[in-house]
Image (tube, rainbow, N blue to C red; front, top):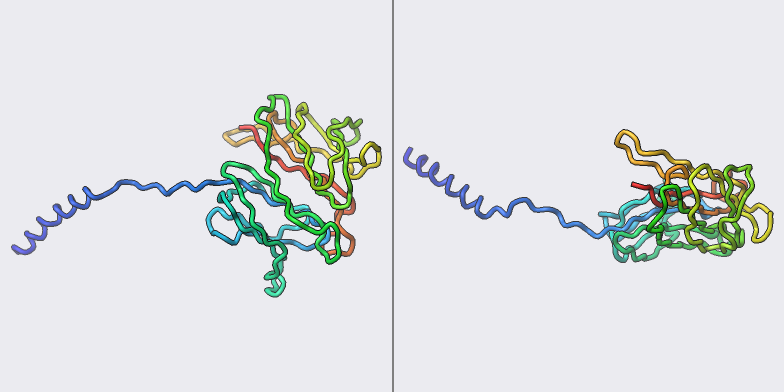
Length: 269
């Protein structure tokens, strides 16, 4: 009994020592983060798996990305990162093949679009590669404006002019001119409201990518954030000119003409 009493007397003392040495709540360190989205526009190849291979945390992956597919922005650990792309397959002998293996340096608090473009089949020219775009959205976009840039990823389409109209059947006015393959225009500020884009050969009316409507978006309601689009002032959008799928290739064969993909770069808060 005396031993028990002694023990009970020691426990509070030990607890007091433990409390004195308790450092309190410790927060996990905040890692520097960039934001990255992937785009697959190689028109003559299969679905692809994308993943950074140098770390587990803040290493966004994408599986089964087919031609003309893209991801949303995802958190990517800043600094030099090693990215690989593999063919999507249930066959280990196929999916272990490396299509792309490269290092990319990402700056914290910066947004990037990583585009896989070109031709992948042997002898295709220009050959496929990764194109890293830093998405530098204008600091100021008016409440009744949106910002649009044109990115030409249309392999073998040549340079393009892109016009804008209020609908796909409207009269198109020039938005940007002479955007070469593998280059991007500056952002252009245009008024909000229904809008379509069409790509033509430079200085000509020959249509390269037929007219298509931009997303209209929706306003924030019931605590939900807005969805960027032409009806939502302050939105920034990338219009990505892309090729048709190569006939007889492993790419989806439903894309019989070049087109324009729309990616929302910024949604107003």
